[in-house]
Image 1 (cartoon, rainbow, N blue to C red):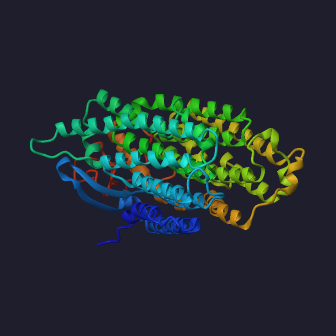
Image 2 (tube, helix red, strand yellow):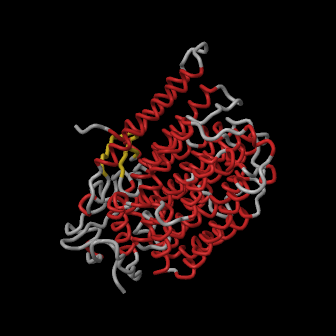
Image 3 (cartoon, rainbow, N blue to C red):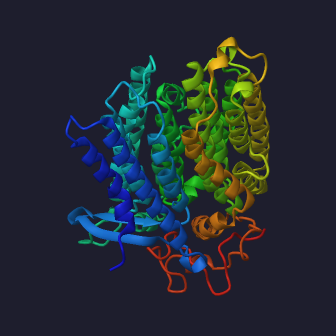
Length: 554
């Protein structure tokens, strides 16, 4: 029996959270912090080992390291975990961000350090389970659990409106989850209704995908909208975004990092894994709606960010534009676009997580986020200034850093199939560079404030905290191949799955794969020439001899 690494990744933070909660009250806060950081470091080591051991190539495009066992067998509910190229690096970035976020100082005052760290670890465990779940019911449970620790993490700071922000976050996302529950249950019942008499239905993603593709298109569209509302709230996509600026701003530094760097990815991942994959024909039909909302979000988020008078709110509204950029890539329905969208999820975690970490350092030194109260920090804190500039350029998409790789793939892929939305996305990228550079200028340049005299530069502990994020930005920007070779096979098969569901959709060849998809549609799902969706081939599109699912040329 192989080592159950996915079970360990899910339960290790949960176990550490329980251990911290059971610590005697007389134990010092440092004990809880060291236990949390140790668990986070071990979790990252497991995630890194999984990334290195992950097999590449079209033959390994399916789920790997899978574990499956019956949970509620009579209902077709199972404990089913797996990882593929789509979820692999989302797990890795989650494992990287949480220990850095838990190491931020000072520990929030609104809760005891023990409670705050326990909630953070519980949130990490729930996020991991969400990314790894291949059973719809299990996915929903993990997706829902994130609400509770997320609520308490936002409350974990000392911001004056944290209670309002936490409540708004909980109510918005809880309401969205109601749509998700209805959508999952309806999909299960509709698919089960078409099974032979006496056959038990299943919440298995493969079974649901196979059955959902046979439903009437109108039913598929309604179900996709039900899923989509929940995921749009979680991302959040305009106009479901209004909880986000308050939550990101009122949360403590570590909370802002994980909310922006990890929690919103649950929505983007969900729409790709559980929306587009289950209902590909409906996704193609509703793509103009999704692309329009994404384009509005890119422009609106960029404009509103540019007029902010508060540094932290500027970064928060910038995330609205980042969400739009990811959605544009996912609904471009090309290998480049979807691959770019996945890489942008990882990039957003690195860049925005790093920005919130640095904004927290500015707050610790000046106790303000207001632009009119900041200025001239470059003189007294040059290292902080240079690091802030590097992370900012990463977020802006400078060539040589991670943001450029994802943005380039998104724009190329979307331009092939949805040209005008790609043009809007390009303008949003330019606006992002403008407001980010202007923010840097107002914080670090200009006349120095008198209170800057006592400001210290970055400590060695702070440099150590930001170093892994900087390393990731540079590595992906200079050498993205390790990501591409792991992500692209799963995306190839997803594209083939979409083409099979809608044969009228002619997706251009990717130009970044190994060829063109040449498996006849009738061989993709139901014949031995290409296996049915399974743990070995999750999307139901396996490569034929000498063929690759990168799309068909027009």
